[in-house]
Length: 48
Image (cartoon, rainbow, N blue to C red; front, side):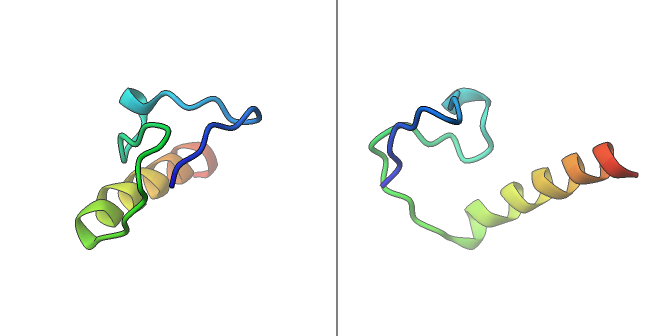
């Protein structure tokens, strides 16, 4: 379950998985593919 934290500010509508506080976290291929694509795109943008 996604919980509210004080260190990282979460803006669900701007995040890739669109999870809100209290949503259960379920990992599926359909959710991992856009998340990994966004991660690698951001990594390439920052470091290449």
